[in-house]
Length: 245
Image 1: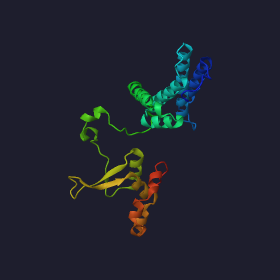
Image 2 (image 1 turned 90 degrees about the vertical axis):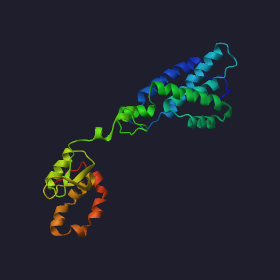
Image 3 (image 1 turned 45 degrees about the horizontal axis):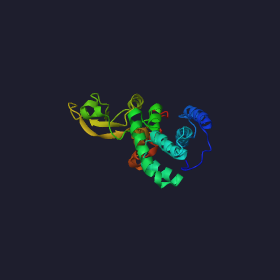
Image 4 (image 1 turned 45 degrees about the vertical axis):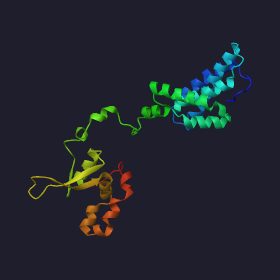
């Protein structure tokens, strides 16, 4: 990445190295090893740019600087992989100590980002999609603009009464994946239902784990402290544990 350097690497060295290194980098991308994409993209871009500059120099353009082409190639590939512009420009300028290349480098990074966005997502976004990781996008899809809350609401709401059987709670937790359950009061004549509150899944798990019904039968429920139980974080990690009634 040195601008103004000599021509130490010929095209017959750069070409096989570019082919071998790119093939190996593509083979290991995405595997579960502590590796990144910054150095491979930097190397591939620099070799590609220097190869282009070297070929132009061999063709008779003596004023061509392969080092400058290597710097622009590294910026182009890095910008296309990461889709970063200003950050990469600052990093590459600091590495090469060449502030005069900042303007063409910014132009290359902008072109790489625009062309990359038109063809495919960035490398990180592509890995997230392949691994099917849950990610909340910065902007919702356009089809969500015509949806209302009514479109995503369920008619058959899973609710809990103020007094429930332990077996019913265990079966409900195994059958559903809801994070919270509305608590309803059927009323005196059970003709209409009133909303009484909301209880979270982890709170139910904590109550079942502490066997609160036994404490309540012994009169120790209030001594134990219902508020401390409800904020107990252990309920978050009990989802896969076996709960016996």
